[in-house]
Amino acid sequence: MAKEHDSAAIVYVFQCIRCFSNSILNGLLSFCLIDIDDRAVLLFILPTFCFSCAFVGINIGTDMTNLPPAEDVVAILRAHQITHVRLFDADRHMLNALANTEIEVMVGVTNEEVLGIGQTPSLAAAWINKNVAAYIPEINITAIAVGSEVLSTIPHAAPILVPAMNNLHRALVASNLNFQVKVSSPQSMDIIPKSFPPSTATFNSSWNSTMYQFLQFLRNTGSFFMLNAYPYYGYINGNGIFPIDYALFRQLPTTKQIVDSNTLFHYNSMYDAMVDAAYYSMEALNFSGIPVIVTETGWPWLGGANERDATVENARTYNGNLIRRVLNDSGPPSRPQTPISTYIYELFNEDKRPGPISEKNWGVFFTNGTSVYSLPLGTSEFTNNSSGDGLFCVAKPDADPSALKAGLDWACGQGMANCGAIQAGKPCFEPNNIQSHSSYAYNDYFHKMRSAGGTCDFGGTATTTSVDPSHGSCIFAGNPRSNLSGLVMPPSAPGPFIPSKTGSILRFSEIAYLVSTLLLALVQL
Image (tube, rainbow, N blue to C red; front, side):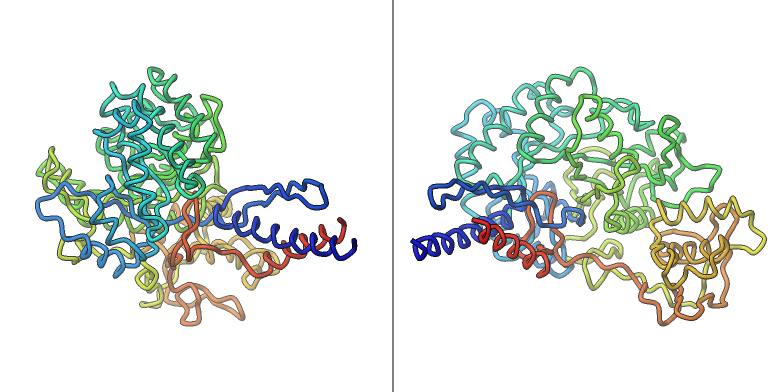
């Protein structure tokens, strides 16, 4: 009997390991029902991946006269180390070109397809088989975007949107792909009539029934809210209510900071306020815990005579600051621990789009692969060479301490400076005074953000100097020994739904811990 028990124990261990492996592939809470010695053992496997690692992806539109061959498009993506893309359809040429690249792909159901898929489950099953199942695992498809801004662009299709999502999800379940591929639908800010202050934001009440079903689906399937957030439109349609620096992620003077009077949260960017408006709108319908992913955002680089804010400099500033903000791995003020993965709109200009000149000029690249403007999208590119001219940003000796405290709090918070070195026990904690700590935080912000418009002002409490304030083991950014010469984009950060084949950050120590836990459970049998 002992040998039989030992044999059963070995089987148990391998079943546990297999279950554990499956949970890694799913990236979600999972469980296994294992039978040993006529006893059913319910084993829960907790998620082990870093869902707090945000990524920056890019949209690939096709509304243009001369779309390059799919192979050339993928070559551009790989040359710039772009790891996440969103397609507005499921074009087979593009999907075939993406095979074996490990780029994470979001495919799209077009608005024209939504009605049929929502009305006929067999069409949904056929769509999944043709456009998803047929390409996995060669292509890392991780999400399906059902339509594009359906509620605001084709409102008559609203009653069929959630049924379409349900039909697609059931087809994924039938193909055993529902853990890898999540279903959602991008919505525009137009469904939130009054987005500021964020704490009072609600969805358009005419969509309450649809939105309740929509959010219920997202929660039940472990999916996420897809938001198209455009500060460009928020700014130009605001008639001067908000300063352009607020739309471009630039630092605002203390006297002009944007504050939600209900929560007292400070909003350093319109982007964050828009994301928070979505969160508060979900809360108004009693839904929480559904993460927001921004499926479209960007800034046009060319406009007509009456579109003076559509410029190359503004587009570069917005998207450059956006990348830095997303890769900071923080959330909006109401949810600072929930990062915001984001897709930039867009890869190429779409000259066939209707509307003003700006509508046609959101692209980051020309179709020949050259950049419209320099934008660091990949690992080797994402540096800002902060130590080139020997300038440092420090607190003014005569600055008011309370003003310095406000500047320090902003720099370490919304300014996204790395303030770890000034914590107790760290190299720059001493001298322990507001002047020294503010100087370190101001300088870190200045060197990270000045190439994208960041300044050394902080409400008049800061100034630049060529005198290096580094001392002992406390090294300021800009010093040749500084390790803060730039930000680095993760080579393949996992999406909010399933990690890529190279995106796992599971550490050996975590594996050892879990294996030891399994062995302990074995001993106790």
